[in-house]
Length: 99
Image: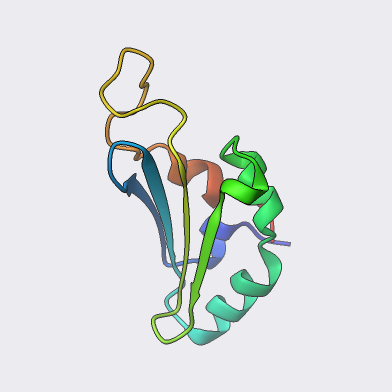
C-alpha cells in the first residue's frame, strides 16, 4: 500500500474563502488518478479533516487528473481560534492517508 502523497504529483490545501478550505490532489497521470480516485474513501478524508462526512464535498476531475475536496474550516479565517490562516497545513493530513 502507498500513501496519497507518494502516489500524487502534488497535494495542496488552501482557503476557499473565510469559511471553507479546499484540498487539491494533482495526480499527474491517468493511472495515478484512477488509483487515488478509487482508493481514497471520502469518509476517511472527512475524518482526517475532522468534519462530518455530509459536510465534505468531493470532485473527481478525470480530464485534469485531479481529486478535490472542500470542507468547512474548523475556525473562521482570521479569528483568534484560527491556527492556519492560509489553510496550508491540511494537505499534510491528506497526503499521509493510505490508499
